[in-house]
Structure formats: structure tokens, C-alpha cells
Length: 145
Image 1: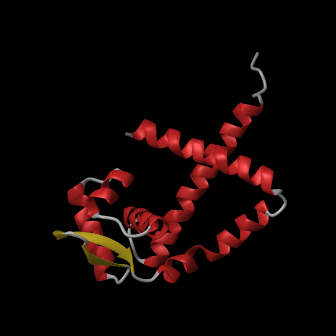
Image 2: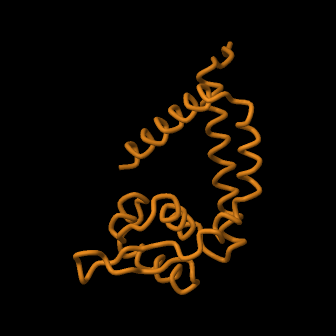
Image 3: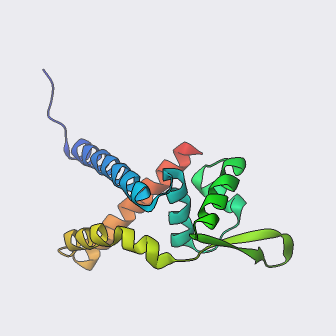
């Protein structure tokens, strides 16, 4: 006889469902933008965190440095990013988003829907949910590394 899942197990199931839906949505976004899914991951990190070196991008995405070179070349050729000289390092580069509005437009509709879903949360509950999501993200990073 199986038992009904408890609240934590139900939340885990919902989180996995959300993870799947985000992955599928990102696949569609990448296809609509004419880029690969890995390219979208890098573009999103650059967009959210600001200029970064290729090695920093490799470290935070888990993408091998040689693969990162190809991704950055494609993104630069397509006008998504630009390479800027790294301060104090003539050989280094910083990667910066060239057209953040272009990426934001790809997510605008779903972002509005998500913000609508969050609108019923008061600040305390929103902060608690944000803390839980940050903890989950951190735990996922720790498992991958």
C-alpha cells in the first residue's frame, strides 16, 4: 500500500515540473532566436550578471572552455554579445551583452505571466519564496560541481 506524498514531496514534484517546463520553454526561445540552447544559457548569464570573462562564464555554466569559445564566436557573429578588453590584461576579454532588450523581448510575455502569478504574494512571502529558490539554486550548483 503506497502512502500519499507529503507536502515536501508534492513541492519537489512541482519544482521538477517547473524545471521541465522552463527547459522546454528555453528550447523554444533558443529556436525562435536562431541560436542553440547552450548559447542561450551563456547569453542569459551574461545578461543577468553583467560583463564576464570567458573563463568565468565557463565556470558558472559548466561549459568547457573550448566549447565556450565556439559559443562566444557564434553569439558575437550574430550580434548578441561583444568582447571588450579586460582592464589590466591586454590578452583578456570581458563579454558583454550588446542588445539586452532583444533577449528581454523573447521572455517578455512569460515574464508578465510569472509576475502576475507572484502579484498575490506580500513582500514577506515573496522574500521567503525567493530565499527558498536561492537555496535550491545553490544546492543544484553544489551537486553539479
